[in-house]
Image (cartoon, rainbow, N blue to C red; front, side, top):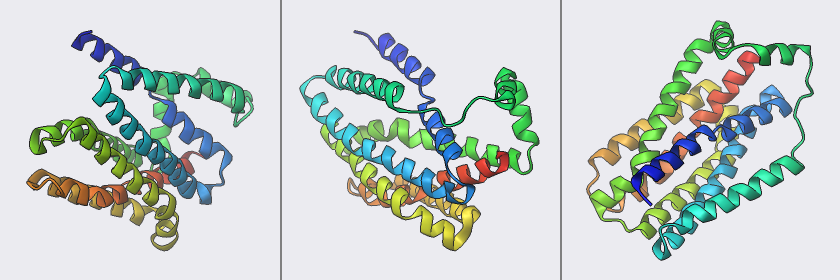
Length: 236
């Protein structure tokens, strides 16, 4: 085992990491436009449930053997692959229009998206949110270990705690917020919560502060379903 193999594994994980995008597209296909923000939120809640169990399992197995979490993840991904292949039906039947779109190059598809009304700024916002979200996702455990001396188990507990907050926010906050404030204001609220949370995290010195900020980060997660609903309506 070496660091090189870890990098290779992460490269393959990145190449095969489009499952969330496909799941989002699937939900968009089978959901009326006015219900999409809520459904995207529920999809995020399901993701959060996995985020609860995954870090706990990884933390427990990691304390026992550093290789065990990777084998467990590979096994569960295999089960997921089989279930998807056997149980999931195609959301839309192929037609001449979809075949024509599929035959287009990536550049043509991107050009088509950008030319849709208001789509270019939405894509820009989505790009920035995605980039920003990778910072805590990548550095959270390292930051906790370096600054607060977290063990693997505590790091796993922190991620699981975030998963709980995230699931609650995605399942119960998005629909009422969109109904009351609209998709745009919900998006702005989510971005503001993330910005404030990251700023406070950067100056926090007490070990309890990251845990106290988890609900704020979870509330920041309402931005993505609202944005996805706006984008899906723009290309429907």
